[in-house]
Length: 114
Length: 110
Image (tube, rainbow over all chains, first blue to last red; front, side):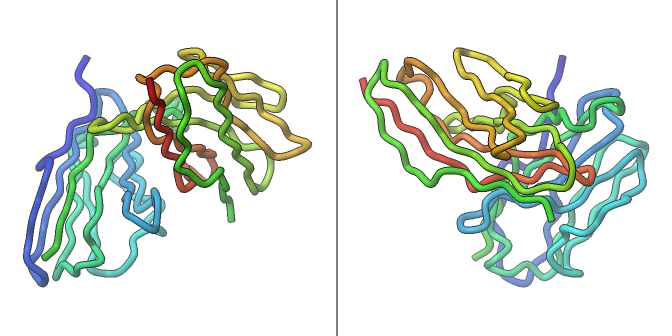
């Protein structure tokens, strides 16, 4: 079946602009996760959704970052007033409710802030 | 909090050589442990996992054993191929999220 999809695959933006990154999880996967992969920081957890609610937002690096999930499916990660240090690959993963630890990752969105 | 420490890279090997990538963890309790692999230009893929002490995860010729006494989950492969060139990440599951090591870049030369 279809895996986790993310769009856009690449995004170049200017400092100060807002960006939206989209994640479409595997059908039936109720848990959805956002991670960030950047040089020097490795892979960092950002936020986790169970259904449409986000029990854990602890990884969001600042209040410029927000995420939502609607209909228990698609999620959008929004970065407002982007900064150069936001440049990274943003990864989305999803998992089945009984095996949340077994996560399936999307290909990522490579964000470059100029 | 939970953390994972893995061997710094990069690692360069010849084909058919033995590969070991060390991984140790710090966590409360006994978390599930994972190795993920990222091939060039591709997304992160689960390579293998172990959910309790002394479990051995294996896949594609790779193995890792969950060692509670040494809090380790070292990845091994007896004979690597060029196609094993990738970045390997050790990870643990805790507090409803995966915590990853820094990643080890492995290059296998023909």
